[in-house]
Image 1 (cartoon, rainbow, N blue to C red):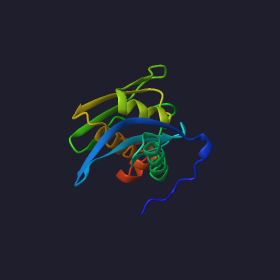
Image 2: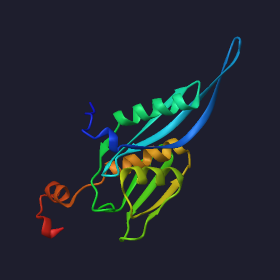
Image 3: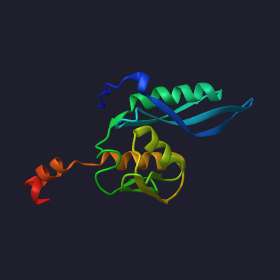
Image 4: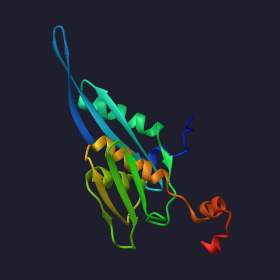
Amino acid sequence: MRRLLEVNPAELKDDVVAINRVTKVVQGGKNLSFSALVVVGDSHGHAGFGMGKAREVPMAIKKGIEQAKKNLIQLNLKGTTIPHQVVGRYGSAQVLLKPAAEGTGVIAGGPVRKVMQVAGIHNVLTKSIGRRNPHNVVKATIVALESLREKGAVAELRGLAVEKL
């Protein structure tokens, strides 16, 4: 069970990654609706994504934002970058994240860039490998960010001192 993080709602920024028009064929014709993929973050190491679906675009975005606020995660960051290289996989989408030196900026494509911006990661190198479906790319990025570990946690897991790593 996922716990809600204590984040100031005033600090949360949202960004729409993709809007998709969806049609459902029914007996009387076609029902048109929209689905929106939204990422939310506070620029201080919290990020989440959500999907909303409604008859109008603004309502779909609003529902996506509410869903994303429920899926916020805490990220292990090292200043304005990530502590180590990591690969996130979801479906057939893979995302490679590499730490970068100060001043490098966010070197990333569409969906990955939006996740990095709302999370507050300012220096990172990324590569999207495999399929470029925005939903799976965002989920692969979140999986990669969830798997980041601090040096102390890795040392404890291996049963070593932090200096020996």
